[in-house]
Image 1: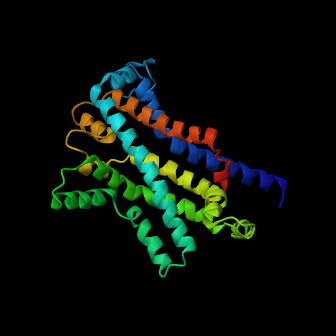
Image 2: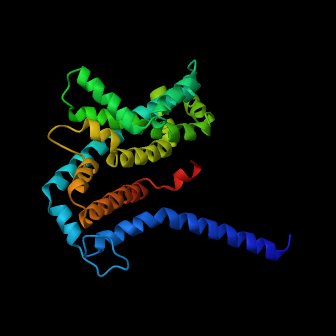
Image 3: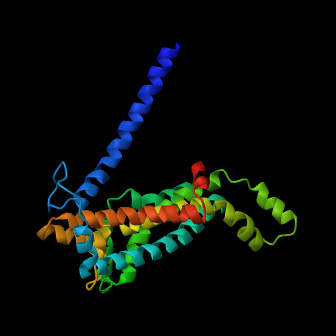
Length: 267
C-alpha cells in the first residue's frame, strides 16, 4: 500500500470524525448562540452578546424552585442507583444465579421501553394505590430508568475482574467483609461511578417520567421549561439549557478531580 493511499485514508478518517463531532456539537452551539443573543428569537449571525436571559432565568422563582428540586432528586437517584446497580451487578456476576442472563435483561428492560410509557404505568400504579404523587414517587421513577446504567458499567468492569486478587487477600487472612471493602469495592468503583454520572444526568434531564410523576406543588426543571415554552419562547429557555449542560459538565469535571476518569477508559 502506497504512502499516498495511507495519507488519503487517514485524512478521510479524520474528516469523518470531525463531521460526527460537529454534528453532535451543533445543537449545543445553536443553544449557546440563542442564550447570548439579545433578541428574543434565534438570529444568525448574532446581533450582539448579552446575559439578560441568564439573569431572567436566575431571577425567576419558578425556575429556581424547579432547579433545586431537580438537583435534590438527581442526587438521591445518583446514590440509590449506585447502591442498587452495584449490588445487582455483583449478584449477577458472582452469585451464580439461575437465569442470570434473563435477570440481566430484566433489569435492563427500562431502557427498552419508551420513558413516557414507564411514566404512565407508574402514574397509574400511584393512582390505584391512592398516592398523591409524592416526591419519593418521582425518585422511584427516575431510579428505575437510571439503575440500568450503573448495572451495565459495573458488569463491564466485573467482566475483566481478576478474582485472584480477592483470593490472595483472603489467603493472607482478610475477612470476607475486609476483602470486599478494601479489594473488591475499589476495583469496581470506576464502573459504579461512571454509571452514577449517567444516572445523575438522566435524572436531572428526565422529562417523560417527570411529566406524570411531579408532585402537585412542585415541578422539575424540564417540566417547567415545557410549560414555559407553551406560552413564551425566548432566550431564557436557552439559558436554562446551558445551565443544565454546564451542570452536567461540572459533575464530570468534579469526579475527574476527585477520582479521575482515566480509570473509565477500560469501559
